[in-house]
Amino acid sequence: MPWTVLAQTLACTAGLTLALVLALWLLSIALRDISIIDMAFSGLIAGLLLAAYWLTGSSGAIPGLIIFLVLIWALRMSVYLVHRNWG
Image 1: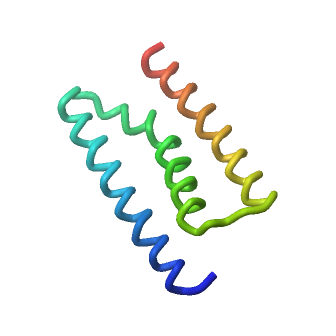
Image 2: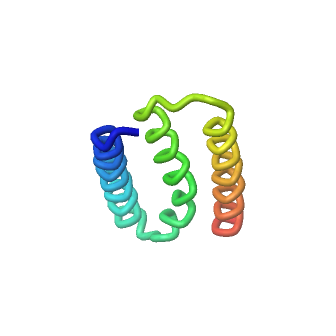
């Protein structure tokens, strides 16, 4: 991967992370409940992985398997944390 593609991918995912975390923080202030950050964390990681995958134009079985496994982890983690917090 060329350095320019890597730098662009890192810059885009950093900007996306900042925007999403800021939105979650503002929502947590409005709701007066900081626990939404915990519930959204794994979804944020999965979203960043998908964004990086899309930005780099990767293809193949191994990247697809990694994305699939991370998405399963993110879904399981989010469901568990939502169930634990909202019971």
